[in-house]
Image (cartoon, rainbow, N blue to C red):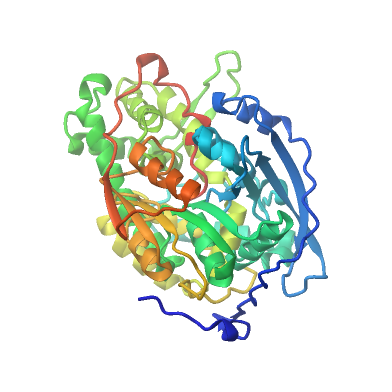
Length: 532
């Protein structure tokens, strides 16, 4: 049964240290409309990859929002927006966010529109925005060399290794503070949620229709908590468990990624006739860790372009791990095939495959949006202040789940030294006026483990579609027709599944790609952004 808060009390409610905004009256004021114009060539070229978008109107814009929402007339920052216009009778606007934090939305709008049905493209403007600090909204970068290869092994062997990584974290946090001091105080999820409310107003939409994936589900949940009466149709895909934000969430990731890498190793073994790495999961796993140990002793340097022999791709144990981490996000022929080929090449005596995997997968997973990722996660909530807590938990987790535990520890360790004060977690839950929403969750999602789906449904209400056996992070528009039918039917008609929780079967695991495609990079929309 829903717990409701009386509308008369909403204006004065304090929520985790934040004043809950008073809900606007039914006769919402008109706001200065967004001034749309042309987009940059990169975005135009990206849209051209989708045959479904031929003839579509792609537009871009920039708007100003307060740096500090508590001082609406103070300093302003710029947000970049993109729009693929509706092609028929307009039903509304669908604002989209890909997650991260640190992912850019102006480009995410393109595949969302490109994979949508003609009916959905006819009914909705698809609008993406780059959250503050990302892409066209600031492109934060604290230390451009932070991820340069070859990096020391993530797995520490002594106190000196730990001291190295802690110094890296401290130096990175210091660089961010020096470069973005004032901005870092206003990078919380609540800031982006308030930005979304201003975007809704500038679009002159009575309600916000929203599709968020990964971290975008937490952003959507925070928005729904702050502005429940402004929510229209909301879809949350691959859900963050608010109870774990953010320290515990990363520990749960460590376990789930280790599990999914074992599933990937089993897939490679199943196709041993193609890859010839090992006939069992155990053999493939052992070969991966053997390769990792060899790269720790002697990293490799590979010239991938024969015409440019001086341009070397360098890969050590940490670069290898960052590449294979992407296998945990999505069971796709492109990603799994590229990584399996890397192992196969190494088995045959060549390092080309692991260099190619790093260029196409690992390097992207490392650097994209890292400054914003850190700025958001380190200030949304207070992380443990003492290193001994981090060390204890990393050692305990790595003993059973070794694949990426230390990797994830160092990735998040700038939060030990972050120069901006952390806030209090938002109590994400259903408030008066919030309509039923639609959630999707795969049972074997690694980046946002399964428990997030049921938890967020319990907190916000609505209906949950579970993909049983699914490994994909972000299940909407990934080829499962039953998933996509629920998604589109809800957006087009408002109808939700008949039951509060429904189950659909996951797609079969992919087949190895054709021989000529095994060394090619993953498609552009397969690239993994950030960690969530």
